[in-house]
Image 1 (cartoon, rainbow, N blue to C red):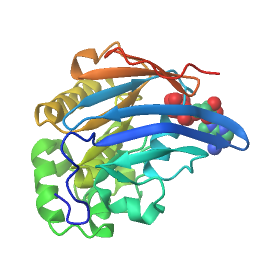
Image 2: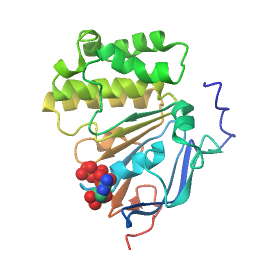
Image 3: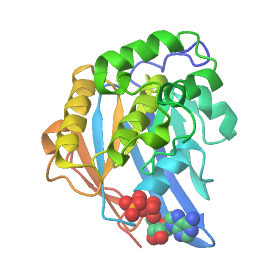
Length: 237
Ligand SMILES: Nc1ncnc2c1ncn2[C@@H]1O[C@H](COP(=O)(O)OP(=O)(O)OP(=O)(O)O)[C@@H](O)[C@H]1O
């Protein structure tokens, strides 16, 4: 547990989002999204290309400013906090486009968020990640740019795991990789679920991985419209 962040009050969701609204260049992209995620849930947010999934995750990470709404994490308001303060919250983010530093080695890419947030046991965490994803250990000293796109996605997942012990946000982890690697990603994600990690996964379809999730929601035109638990979001305007 991070020293910087107290445990959430009993019964409080890990993540609670209320009325989250984002506008880009005066166009409203996200229309008042409200949702919450409890500890140990693996939740899917499903939507077509352009539905707003990436924008939502970027807003959670503080990369994309909010026009309105609030984000509570572990019982504390984080939407008012500057980006650098949010980095230490132990939220791991795997962006859809990977965003590795090409000239750094695989190991350095994974360790980087551990170093920047001052995690004391980054080396031990790296060993744990190698145990979970042994194929990464085999390429640990290679520069990230020498890997295939699918391998780079695995490294981006590993980097999110380095600090994401409170919450993992995975943007389309199964997209754009060869079928064999999709199966491997599913295996790793299933392992995270069995460890009761708290995870939000965005994807464009539910077809392949429905059984992975404890719950799913649908996002359409910037609004969350349905959830398997019967909750209804705001329909798109
Ligand atoms: N920087 C930007 N400038 C203008 N429009 C943007 C920008 N970023 C996102 N959008 C628009 O916001 C909407 C949501 O995009 P977003 O990338 O969040 O969707 P997505 O569900 O993640 O889809 P994809 O899987 O294609 O990334 C789209 O209409 C997109 O064109």
